[in-house]
Amino acid sequence: LRALRGPDPGPALARFAGLQAPDPVRAALVLGALATVRERLVAAGAVTWAEVGWHVEPAEVTAILDGLRPTTRRLRVGFDRWEPFGAAVVIADARFASGSPAAPGVAFGRLRWVPSVAHLANVRPRDVIVASYPTQHLAAMLWDAAGIVTTAGSPAAHLFESARALGIPAVASVRLEDMLGTDLAAADGRFALALDGDGGLVYATEW
Image (tube, rainbow, N blue to C red):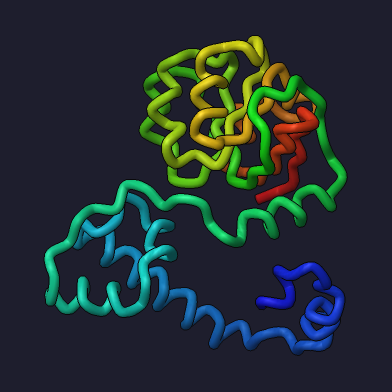
């Protein structure tokens, strides 16, 4: 896995290509067990969303589930070291739309459509927030967003100034629906996005 994330992933990819497919029954058992652990972390109040459980160290998981330490709900995840790899996978799909660069950097995450304040509760850690305009009510979501995209608005908006200050890549004025082939409400949660905040490009593939 270290080689796969390194500057020369070719040999690692070749090794993956030579692996046999996992046994589906055993794989289902493992994934089911992991899902149960993540759900128990939510029930214990250790994480806000089950997906955040992937970011809790195994020793900490054991202690929490054994009741050996008090739990503090984890609200933020922070940058995931696999995000650049995920971005490279999405970019390789070669489906993209152009917009205006609003904050530099490369981002990767699940598309989360936020048409109004009422939808802010749906945003999960490391999502890419997609909105119509760079309105200031989105600022609170920047703390753990992977990136932000708007379909209209100016890169000079205060929201993008906040994104630049926090190091959150952003692209403005992107016609995402034309690229995705569906409206954003239907695309919510179904697509992975990669942002090139320097070039003003947004790439997409199925999640």
